[in-house]
Image (cartoon, rainbow, N blue to C red):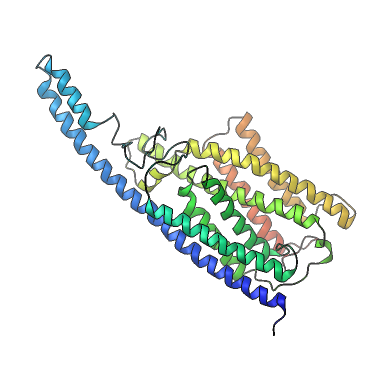
Amino acid sequence: MLPINETMGQYSELFMLLAAGTYTVAFIAFAWDLAKSSKTLRAVDLKAAELSGAAAARVPVAAGVGSSAGAVDRAGADVAGPAGRAERPTSAMAGAGNAAGIGQTADGDMRYAAERRVPARVAVALTVLGAAIHAAGVITRAIGAGRVPWGNMYEFLTTGAFVAVAVFLLVLIRRDLRFLGTFVVGLAIIMLVAASVAYWTPVGHLVPALQSYWLIIHVSIAVLSSALFTLTFAMSALQLVQSHRQKTIAAGGADKLGFMRLVPNALSLENLSYRINAIAFVGWTFTLMFGAIWAEKAWGRFWGWDTKEVWTFVIWVVYAGYLHARATRGWTGTRAAWLSIVGYLCVVFNFTIVNQFFNGLHSYSGL
């Protein structure tokens, strides 16, 4: 009979596999929602264009009729709908108070509309199910290890993926961020696959330096901050695509990315990304501070220029620069998006390359 820790470890791996499978189906559902909704919006545009053309054809006939011209104009307006309808059709997809910008139907405030997008609802339900299974995997890993499950890269990656999805689902309660589903769930799948293939580590005890209550404080805040940075990375990437698309449409070019009409305009994405980055930055500041306190408890010094410490500080500097540049120097638009993306790439580099290839006091990859 296997010991309890090995049994729980096997259960954890099974739950992780099931969670990855469920996330994959949810990813397909989110992608299906974007494709189906984009097709529906194109059909609405074509119908609106036909009605607008028919209304425009009636105006010259009534131009010389005198008093009857106003009646015909009103009739034409009733048929054609509001000006610019071909760009912003009044449909269930648009929601109330649409101010998303050129070629947009998504609500700039990311509020829920009254429409019934079945694929999106199915995708969210599957994501919730996947998160529940994922939570079971994290919990069984913790029970098997007899401690919090973030003592090595495998555990940090699986727990980080869960927290990223959980934060996404929590934000969904207040904001309609279903357009981020393919990005967030896709990243969670990549993280789980990477954890299982490249960073798998059997259940075991912690090295002495990690056997401290500071592990719970320091690493939990780092995981939560990294999850928030994951959301802003996805939003910044979409912001760049949306900004390019809006400029193309404004210049009279063809809209080749119709599914992006379900995504809020670039300014709305940038504003929300800035707010979330500000929250995550506060968390990363505490990560840096608590890490220094923990280092003093474990090694007798607050700072030792260890590679991991240096890159944690580099990440703090990049995001501090991002917040400062956007708030006081007018770094908005694509420059702010790129700086946010650079910050997240530093987070990824710190977790992967630094943990694997740089020897130091923080070499806890478990590999």
